[in-house]
Image: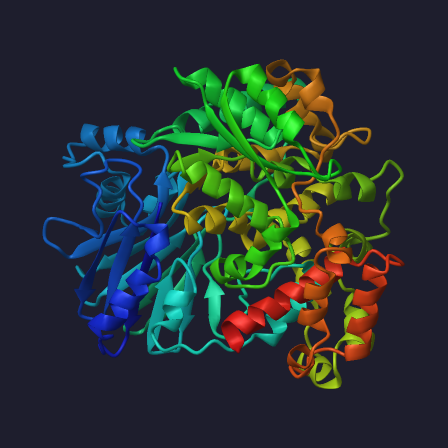
Length: 593
């Protein structure tokens, strides 16, 4: 796990050395153990390293024998042991036990398609100066577990694992009105957009190739290319169990202490149980809880810990946790209405006090229909007259925070409404759904969430909150083999008779037992709605009912006042709307003001 950064200047103009040092410094939390960068005729690549595998031999950048090909990476290649053995059989000598050297050797052997061999989470930069012109290749892993941002002004492309290092090169932070409109509709900024003008994500499974003559962008892997196939429950379950077991096994490869996040839900419990079967010592597990029993899962996590004999540690958090909201958003760099980032930061701190890496249960809900919204929308008598009706219905009932019509008619100021008059989140969603006509409607909904919600919000959580405290988070459910299996399955294997995650529960019930497997799902969230009525009501008013907020000219003050006060007084539950507006205000104060 690391942070990478660099640039390619098509005119050959070099950035000052001090700028590269500042880019490096801004990523120190992602890699406090080591750093380095290399200059080339048209740019540079650099790395901050969190040493997990081959502590002594994994320094980056790594270069080939003639120095013409160099590579940096952020992430882990879980099948590097098997790939190293394959390379040795081909007569290729490896000097280290580092997965980064495996990347370099594979690129030298196979060229730009080397990435297809990889099972891992990664953002990779390869500089190749062997041909008649230099080229920089940027790659992102299949599901977008690892972040990679770029800014290209036509002359210079700058890239980094986070956005702040891009600002260090002189790029100004300017709010992206289109992205912020989508944020207010969806509660997160959908990739490849970011909240900043001119800065975007590299797509999951994407590759950029930058040379003095321009840039080529393509996809080396696409979720939309998966084809469904008939599958019986018993066969699907057997294949899923084998893949889950192997995904956990290869993610235990580390030369440092590691553990697991354990909420007590089916996903983290499954990961913990499989870890315990592959380890000769008890698993170190970590969780946090709340004094409000409606939101607390502590007892469930403790039951799992007892079942698998883990060394379990947990904490109870208080409303004062929201004091850390600006700190969290500084790491996120974009507005997020999901306040569970704050307890995730706390559990990451708890884990980082004893380990350098954890396994998590992230990704399962989007693969196997784990959220209640799937059950509620795709009920037994659900029918859609056509695909357009499905897209509209699913967006309105399962995705939307502020309806677009509400934004335009009652929340936006006149100026803000004009700025986004041609922007449609509905069209964005419908376009993505139209890309996968081979899937049934439920699988299309899962596709949409895997394409946007996962890299746009849910995977940001373990990456940014873990990296804030130099902790690596690994996600076995997002092993690409499991992803491809899940999207080959039909809807009835995932959601059957109102039961979410049907195939997963069938698969892990012998491991977890019926009580843990079949208990009702509880979202990992913060009781912020209650806090905003009591301890934090004054803070909310200071954020949303002051001149500083109103002077931005984004919203109609009377509408915001009614929305907040009706929540505080208890006449309406506007928790999600209030926290999204507060997140947006925090973000403006941190990055735009």
